[in-house]
Each structure stands twice: as structure tokens, then as C-alpha cells.
Image (cartoon, rainbow, N blue to C red; front, side, top):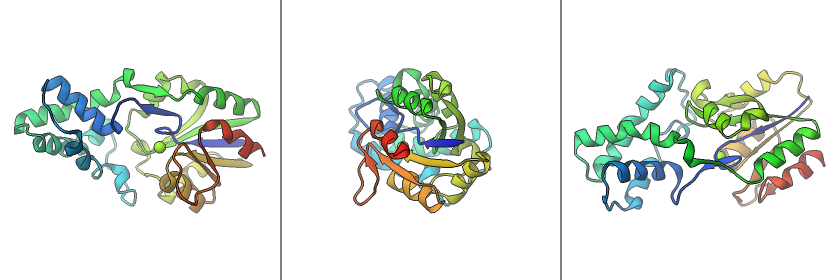
Length: 231
Ligand SMILES: [Mg+2]
């Protein structure tokens, strides 16, 4: 058996918008709840660079054992961001509770153009596909709506496991679950979480879409992956 373990966000799919996904989401909530707010997105961004589970991968979070608990842990950070953008307390809390629905809006999620053709090509040469993601609890539903459930057999998602990449345990769980694996590769757009994490766990890895100095092998898009894993 041979497995390809894919990162999801920024590798197979992405959330559309002019700004990084979380900044974009909070801006969408502001646009909806406070039309004409005139908030500079650069004011929002710094608040969202810390405080998420994947910003502290060394901290396990099995205690956030339901989707409500997971989102509930983030709400204070969202509320703080909205307060910094000028919202008063009650309004900020209301908008913080709206972030979940906005982020999950199916209209905002897209596969990259090469995703399905490349997964199909690799399936036809005998590879099975799994996801290993640092993501929200609803990731399996997002992936399913995008049609990935027809191609991906296993999903390992940090919001369910409590372990964020590049923590070794995140990768060890994949190796433990995919017993009888002869060959395995990790593929992702994050040099630290995906590539360094996988390599530290003994899994060869390919960086895609986002170059990072000295990290090889690297592919601009997914079309180069087959040549590497089958070469
Ligand atoms: Mg990614």
C-alpha cells in the first residue's frame, strides 16, 4: 500500500478573498454587521497571527473535544479584535459569535484547478490519499462539499486529534493508522508544519505552491508531484 498525505488549506483548497482567510472572514463579518465600517484590514491582521491552536503546536488541546468548545476557545480573540476595530463590548461579542458561520460559508471555499486531476492521476498509479490538516472541526464537511471525499480515504484533523503539525504526535498518528504502508509522502505548502514536521517523523515530504529557501523538493503546483513520488 502506498499513501500520499496531503495538507488541505493552501495545498488542495483555499478560502477565497483578498486577505488571508481569517482576516478576510472577520472583514466579511464587519461588512455584514457594520456596513461602511472603513476598518483598515491591517489593523485586524496582527490579532489573528497568534491565539489559534496551530500557533502553539507544542500545546495539545484534547480538552477542546467538541466543535463548540473549539470555537468557544477562539471567541475571546475574535471579540478582542472587533473591540480594537472600534466595536463596543456587546457588539464585539455578537460579531465574534458570527465568525464561525462566516468562515464555514461553502461559497468561499475552492479547490485549486490542478487538485482533482492530480489526485486522479496519482490514484490511477496506485496511490491512496489522506489529509493531515491543522484546521477547524468542520474540515471534513468542507472537504466533502468540495468533492474531496471521493478521492481521500482518511482525514487526520488537528481539531479532532488535538495535535497540530509539526508536532511529532500528529504524524505518528498517521503512521499508526496507515498500517502496512510501503511508501508514504507528505505534501503541503508550509515548510515548517508540513515539510519539517514530516521529515522529523521520518516521512519524506514535498513543498508545494509556497517556496521556502533551501527546502527541496519543491513544486510550483501539484502537477510536479507525480514525477517525484513515482520517479
Ligand atoms: Mg497549508
